[in-house]
Image (tube, rainbow over all chains, first blue to last red; front, side, top):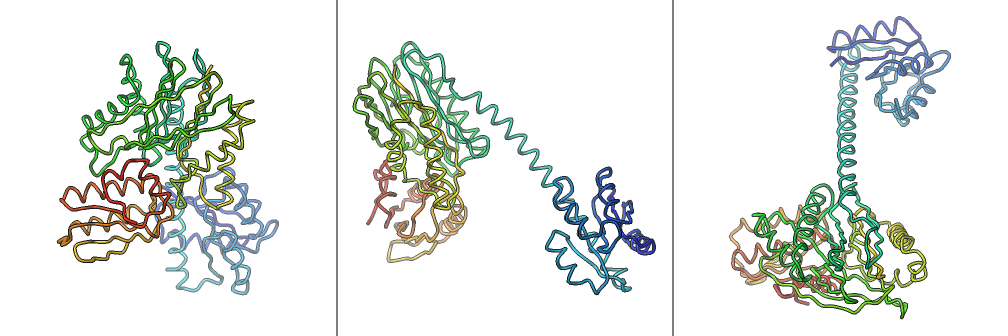
Length: 388
Length: 101
């Protein structure tokens, strides 16, 4: 790789001297020269520059102004700048370091500066820049991958139309574009099957795991008359049968709440998922659907149970994942009571616009995290099912 | 994490939140412990200082329980807040190990 170094100095002799020193000590370099700041900006606009050696005192546009413009430009602010000036300007040099110059040297150059210091400074600055560029390229690549993964995750989401017995409303916010939260809802032969799950951790690995959960779920509910506890047991057994790491040191575990709506009843089974809520429209009140159960993927051969509750037209089931209240160092996996209390405050919104209700819950938790100075960076999934 | 052996019981006192950020360093300590002679019969994870827990933290507790059980020793937790206790009950973990006050 050839490094392109731009030397900006109005004195021809200084430019020649610096060029000479660097040529003798660095390999694979080429030079550009400028006699003022305006020329510097023109050169960086048309040429790839990897390092700028910038004199602070120049006509037309001095080094201070040039540095300010370079550092405020999103296109050029990463280019390392080594400033230089007369020894009497040392105070000004200090200011330029604060403004983003990576290093400095003073003139006149001593023999030591010429042979050792300046080449070393230039080498270090180029190395740092190369590392920065590698990180930026990797970040771009990762972001592109995440964007693709996010598109795929969105394809996997249930569609909010095509149901006869219910209306479906959803909000999905994966922290990294892809996440371990998963929900699904599908109507088969007059039965509405739904599930919400949260795979341990978040990010790409959790996203891959949640894709597997979705496929597994869709396959299992093909069985006629299957009940929620059988779905969970089947999933748990399949994980232990198919993945030899299951239950050992690399865990693939998730919380899940599985339900079936049929003939004005909602059958459900819970695998350690935060309690969902049901909004009884006649009473205009929320109730928690309380049932405890084992995490899926934790222990082989455990059993789950199915319970049911009666439901009527316009009742709404509200399911959510712990990402609302559980994120970062200040995680609090136990704060689901806040979801319950906030939901009760938003009953009017729920009745008029379920989508706004989901947005308001999300915003409410955003504000709670902000007030507590905690991160809101876990995956969040919420689903409302209104009975027709 | 602080280790405190009292007779046959090894008490592991957590000093940092039981969250993803800290679990890796807890696991290093646990690896060291399981490589040692282990001249105790029970491991008790002391959660008295723990205010925050996330899903990775829960996985850590379950992993430690299973690892302890695999070497035929008893496992329990102590000092958990009422919120953490209700979380463990939600997961039915109280069916597997003791939850001391």
